[in-house]
Each structure stands twice: as structure tokens, then as C-alpha cells.
Length: 346
Ligand code: WQD
Image (cartoon, rainbow, N blue to C red; front, side, top):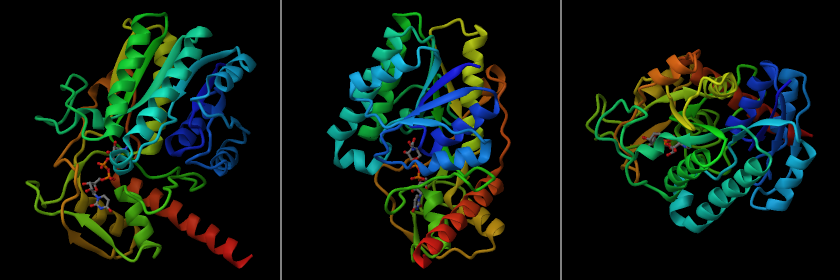
């Protein structure tokens, strides 16, 4: 049974990927410093899969502590690297925090990958590397534009660092560029756990619907789109997770002839903010309390993926549509509310 190290395994996409890996026969361990996540995610993973996943509470920037995990597990055959800070707004206000955390963590991890001759790495990247594209849908060869935020810059630099390692060693790498991951596992046992006031659209919708937030704001309806609101490619987190398992299988198959391959992980459908809200209202039966406000800095008008390469090369397929994304996000939010209510009553 191949053993995979997942960094950030207690996070949103990391925990969903642990589930998919276990369900496809992999042995998994996690490194997560729990600075922006919780071990409760692994409780959910165990409830879904029946498998207890060991997490090492290690700061990846600490090379010696990271190395010790690899020394304890010399049979690691692949690494999936999620662990990074990802709040765009925070990165603008505190760029050095993002460069230090996201890049030093990556470099420390890759030094271990190289030292232990780990053959395969999958790197968590983002459509943010495309900046504000001149043409959509974007393909993997769409020119990279200057990053719109330090967070986006760390993803662009991270891709180059991984690519350069692959070019200079026997490591083979896959870079996965996520569009907008949303939704939750159908069991509602794991899902997105934003810290503080949610910045991303779907948790803002579900927390407003649950009454956790009094109202949400649509950041602008005067864009040149079909209803004036921004267009994004929302993709279910379980579809994203599945692509990671397929990427490892692709690497293990030996089919990848190049040191590094890049794949867009999106549905290929552009959805407006207002369409997302209307989908949520349709599946939840909740009339959402939102208002139209001014545009948000750094927002681009529209982006969505050409996902043909991932569909053809990885054998990937999209299992969840927009309604399913909203339905699972709402079920997860309702479960969080119920859990918090029980905690208050105890
Ligand atoms: C989507 C749309 C907002 C909240 C970011 C990162 C990207 C990736 C996903 C990590 C925009 C609008 C949002 C709200 C709103 N993260 N919105 N009211 O900015 O496309 O992408 O998260 O990889 O790298 O850049 O996602 O969910 O923040 O916004 O109107 O309360 O929803 O203006 O048009 P974004 P988002």
C-alpha cells in the first residue's frame, strides 16, 4: 500500500484529499502545524473512512522537525503539499508573513523530498497565477501575469521552485491550479472552516443564511458580465480531492514524460456571484439577506478554466454541479451550527 505524506492534511482541501486517498487504497500521514486548522478534521476523516490518520504537529519551516518525519517514514512514496496561508487580503497587509511561511515551508519540504529521493510531488497551486487573463477560458499555457497579491506571488514562485527541483533531480511533479473550491463532503462530517469573518463567497453565503452574519455584501454588480456580478469557476472540493489521487496515479504509472506537468482544476463553467446566490436559495429554501455594495479591490471580472487537459490526461471527471456544491456547503454549515449550539447548551 503506497504511503503518501499530505502536508496541511487538517485543512479544507487536505482533509477531503485524505478521504479520497484512503478510499483508493493509500496509506496516509499528515503534517499540519494546526495554526489555521483543527484536528477535528481528522476526526471527520476517521468517521468517513474508518481510518485514523496520524498528524505530526510540525512547522514545515523547521527543517529538522520535518526531516524527522521522513526519517520515521522512509516508505513515503509521494508528497501532496497543501500547507500554506491563503488569505489574499491578509497577504496584501502582511506580505513578509506570506513569503516567509509559504516559501520557507516549501523549500524545507523539498529539501527532504530530495534527500529521501521521494519520486513524486503534487503541489497545490491556484488560478490566481493567471492574474486578470486577456482571454477566457484559460488553458495551462495561458500566459502568467504579475500576481495580484503576495499570496498569488507565493503560488507563482512556488510553482517555479517545484519546477526547478524537478528539472534538476529525479523528482517528477504535478502542479494543480485550483479555481474556486467550494462545498463539503456529502456526509457533512468535514468541510470548510474559515477563521473569523469569511472572505470567500460560499462561506459568506452559508454563514449569512445561518444567521451567523447579519447580511452579506455582493461586491459590485456593475461589471461587464451577464448580470453585472463577477464570474468565477466554482468547483466542488471532492472533485478537487479526486484529482489529487488521479495525479499520484498518473505519476506512479510512469506516463509523465516531462519533469513537471500543470493541470487546471475547474469545471469549465463560469458562474456569476448572483447565480451562485440564486442556486443556494433554490437548494436551501432560504432567502438570502444580501445587499449590493462597491467593488472589492483586487477582484478580476471573470475567470474560468479550460479543463480538457485534466479530463483527458488524468482521467478526471466532474461529479458535482453547482446545486450540489451549494447543497453540501449548506448541510455542513447546518452541522456546524448544531455542534456549536450543543456546545453552548453543555
Ligand atoms: C469570489 C467572488 C467576490 C465574498 C480567492 C483566491 C483564490 C482562491 C479562491 C485560494 C468575487 C465575490 C465574495 C463576499 C462577494 N483561494 N464575493 N461577497 O477572490 O475569486 O478567489 O479564493 O487558492 O486564490 O484569490 O474567491 O470567494 O473571495 O470571491 O461578492 O462576501 O465572490 O467579489 O467576485 P476569489 P472569493
